[in-house]
Image (tube, one colour):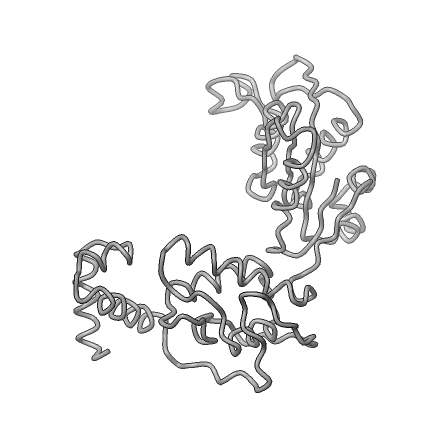
Length: 298
């Protein structure tokens, strides 16, 4: 199975959901980022090695294919896999056993393989960097995960869900989006997709002062969508404003953090111990921040 989509669209979440909803859900789920290893280390990571197989191989190492037996292995960024590893992976997909590096024992595993990539694999095939036969084996079932900018009202649904999560986690911060913030979210281009949206909402949850998230709390860069479909009202989220979003503030992140600390301390009636608990910082850090607040006249 091949899951394709831009970075940050949630390809691993899709893979995990496939595993959890399948008959293999009681088996292991193993994730490997193919881009995180060079060729030799990736072979060892996937297929294992025997003691003495190479310098530093002090003991036998079971590969992730063995660990994923009767479960699912998720191969992220498969477009970064070397041609040699691709050949071994193709043999496993065709039902052949494999050997650990430096070993002679033939190992057979029963594994579902879910591969993911943000690259265009046909282009890599044309460049001689990806095996065409492996591509066709993987894409028997192919899922294309759309970018966030093409998902309409999902932007506000996800933002509302993230906001509830962070509010529940911290017990403070905004509880809903303002109309202007919702408008800003819908107009943004989201080059980082869902990952960028989650980070923006987490920032707003930490730095927001009011019950409603304001556009400045999100810290969005000026990347607008080329076309923006109007969003319908979403439960728990304020409807979109009919006026343009206000210009971005020049307030920097450090000042926003200090103002947030000052506001939390005020809410605690000046109780520094309680403020430290809510902020998740030590008293020494709080005193340091209070000195900065006084110095800057905030």
